[in-house]
Every structure is written in structure tokens, then in C-alpha cells.
Length: 282
Ligand SMILES: NC(=O)c1ccc[n+]([C@@H]2O[C@H](COP(=O)([O-])OP(=O)(O)OC[C@H]3O[C@@H](n4cnc5c(N)ncnc54)[C@H](O)[C@@H]3O)[C@@H](O)[C@H]2O)c1
Image: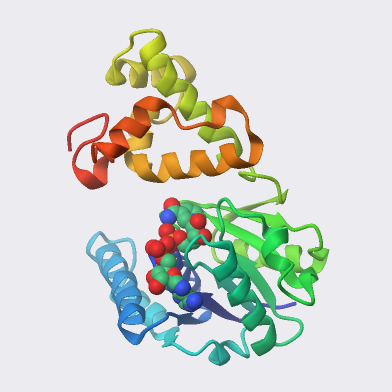
């Protein structure tokens, strides 16, 4: 299947980023939000990032305008009827996502690919809401989607090879570095990174290490491009704790449980870069 027209449902942090990736690659893209105001906010975010790219010389004004011309907005899911690929990026709630997929199946062509950007829910459980789960897959982008190259293309229990391969090819054409994986908790990166970052935080207390020294240890001793404390500050302590809890609920492994220290930081509002304070001051 040759993907030409893309729908994005939900233009929040991830949806706006995914829509930006799509329009920058020249795909006609239609963004859906619950209200025109929220749609407009998503569009403004994309416009801001593209204009910053122009200021920094990463793209020309003409390229920015061409990308923006590929984007249209709607509050009606029915207007996604002729999309070849729809990426869902609404809130991380199973019932809501199932409802969106039930409706997407009703309004789109039978051969359209329906993808979820879920981080922690099961793609297969979302797909169960549809009559034809073979065309449902996961497309897990990383935040910020226009910057981070990886997209995990997730095979649900019933996803067809055709749907997986078409999404993989589209992600490549959109300038991303896709990888394929099965529908298991945390997929690839979060399954590995979440317990690993939790280990680093626990070692702070176990070994009496200062965050800056932990970061120096892992950059200089393990070749990490960024230390674990700086990385958690960038991700957001609340986002990490939430993802960690979700993984722990699924796997029950002790290492996946959010460390006490991070839960305390979250309670104190020390969320990292976004709150001006985390392991470091910003
Ligand atoms: N934020 C991250 O770092 C990150 C990374 C990877 C994946 N994800 C996943 O991406 C998804 C979206 O996360 P986010 O951080 O962008 O959330 P967000 O809260 O920023 O955005 C969600 C958007 O969905 C909209 N929405 C809600 N119901 C809708 C509906 N029925 N139709 C259309 N739009 C609807 C909301 O108005 C909101 O704008 C979640 O599944 C999340 O787990 C998030």
C-alpha cells in the first residue's frame, strides 16, 4: 500500500510532532482534535517549531510554507475517510483509544492502516475494539517526534505483515529510523531504559553518589551521551514515574517500580527542566 494521505488524531505534544514529521516530508496530513481551538493550538505549535527551524537555518521559508500548506484541521473523524494511514495520539486511556479505533474503522477505507502511538497500553487490546484488527499496529514515536529519529513499529497479535511493512516504509520516507518489534510491555526502548534509569537513581542512595558525579560516571565510564540524572530531568520526573509505574503494573519486576526518591521529587514539584528544578537547577 502506497501511503499518501495521513490522519493524526489528537494534536497534543505527540500528535503535533507527528503531524509535523508528516507535513515536512510532504504528505497531505489532516489533524483531528476535539475542538477547533485545540486544533488551532496544535497547528500553532507546528508553525512555531518550523519557524524556529527557519531562524536557525535548518529549512527555508519556502519549505516551511510548503509544509504548512500540507496540513489541514478537522473536528470530525469522518473527514479522515480517505486517509491511507491514521496515527492516533490521544490521551493514554484504553477506553478512549478503543472508542477512537472503533470509530476510525467505521469511517476509513477497509485497507487504511490504523496506528496507535501508545507508550504503555497493549496495541492488541486496543485493536480488539475493531472488527478487523489485522490493519491495526503501533507506531511509537519518541518525544520530541520531529527531533528523535526512532519509531518503534509494533506488531499487535493480529497485525498483518502488510500493515507493518507499509508503516515501516512510510516512516522511512518521513525521514525516521523505524524498527519492528512485538507488542510486549515497554516495547524496546522503554523496556530497557526505564529499569536502567531506576537502577541509576537507586545507586545514588545505595552508593552515596551525587547526581552530577553519577552523570560523570555514566558518560565517562559507559560512554552514555548524557548522564541518567540529566536524562530524567529532560524526560520529566512525572513522565518517567508514570511510565515506570505502568511498566511495573504489567511486569511486576522490582526494578521497574518507581524509586522512592523520584516519587518524592514528583510530590515536591521537582519535575526536571520543565519546572526549573529536578536533579539540577535550570
Ligand atoms: N509525551 C510523551 O513523551 C509520549 C511519548 C511517546 C508516546 N506518547 C503517547 O502519545 C499519546 C499522546 O500523548 P501526549 O503526551 O501527546 O498527550 P497530550 O495530552 O499532550 O495530547 C493528547 C491530545 O489528545 C486530544 N484528544 C483527547 N481525546 C481526543 C479525541 N477523542 N479525539 C481527538 N483528540 C483527542 C487532547 O485534546 C490532547 O490535545 C499517549 O498515548 C502517550 O502515551 C507520549
